[in-house]
Image 1 (cartoon, rainbow, N blue to C red):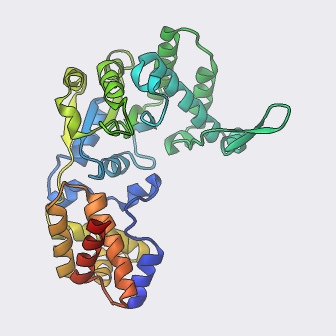
Image 2 (tube, rainbow, N blue to C red; image 1 turned 45 degrees about the vertical axis):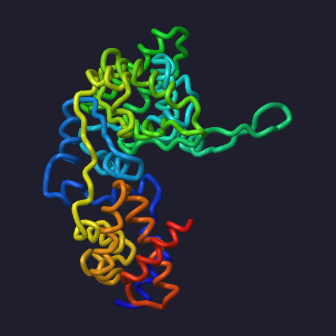
Image 3 (tube, rainbow, N blue to C red; image 1 turned 90 degrees about the vertical axis):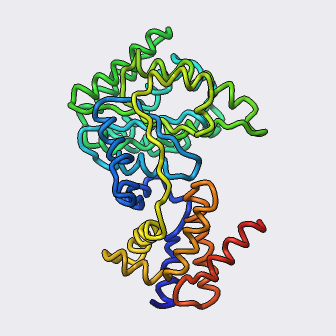
Length: 350
């Protein structure tokens, strides 16, 4: 236990509540491991391997994205995750099945550009010249899934299939089916990963959220089952469960998994110990945890989490992140309970 260790943790942003999505795989401590059960990560894995469509239910910050990244991590065997952004796209993509299918095809086409060696340079371009005056046209940056980079022949086949320009809604749906069938022909189970579909909440800055949400669950989810017949994992906010459209769509969702709550202070220690171990380059996560935070602070942190909605990102990681900065400013050798208390107070005042 030393000030130097705390400084390293702070410099590495060890308890960063919003790490890059690609980092979630190694940072995540499975809920199954924390609870001693099999109802979360293992259930999701089994369901996706059976080709099922899964609703992963939890509030924002509860760990849905981390769970998905853990289950569908780099080079997972037999599964081909296809991350499909929906909430940040044009509303039509979430409301119109044909638009959704076209969006899937477009994303695959972008991934192929990144995966094929001869075109890797093009795939990394974020801006390209446009027009005779040399104006710059912004393009979305899309990183190819790792499984696709390892399947060069499949990437070429997908390139040919996605390069066609369908005209009608039925042609777009056929094209999407063809791409999924090509992936299956390689012995892989395609999995559509829709982990931003929990964002359509009724807020003043999203006046059309309820309409978009209703159309997605009322029309697009049915297409996933009946037209594309593909495995999928969908992020679902608990507020959706009472919607008529969601209830109607439930028949097309084979499995529902509710994100568990963190069961105790020891589990909070596992979460922070994993991150501290990576930051300090220690394989002994318990030792790394001891260099970061004392047991009374862990108990205080869990108590704070348990008093609120189960938002791990806000009530565990953000609080620990703030407390770490306070402890460093305090020249402490560990995060102590008083640092957690100050961090909570600052959050409440903010």
